[in-house]
Length: 182
Image 1 (cartoon, one colour):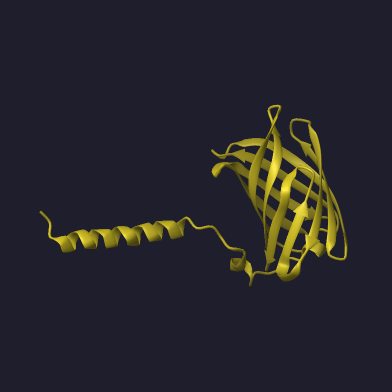
Image 2 (cartoon, helix red, strand yellow):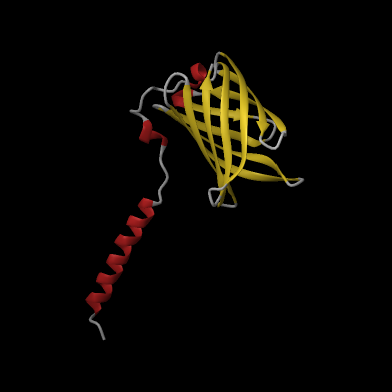
């Protein structure tokens, strides 16, 4: 039989390893990008016409669908409208109109007809993190999918976007998108 101090030492080692593993799995925080440039101002970037190119990948990384988007965007004060016209690789089309509101400290809220409730976002440095639930049509049904959406301004014309999709906490896949301002 091992002495009692060995059991205590084993538990301590297990706790340290568990903490390290949990830290490795943590997600980025918007404040991580506070010093990154160029600084993203959504009202400036999402103003005028933008083109976007993207794809959906499933949880294995396989490309399921490609798409393009033409966005017509405008702001009046702290209220913006982003009118998105999607064209998918299978020939289908979709339209989403976001209504955004800018709040203090880089916070934003947004609504769209297929967004359940309100989207909540935060900007810091060159990044914007956006969380929302989308009512997504799939095989003749509509399912509610949670999005953890990250945008990164690369320069005054290009922004990259990566969004994780989840249902009941289970990863379904990702959306990868590049925006190009005209």
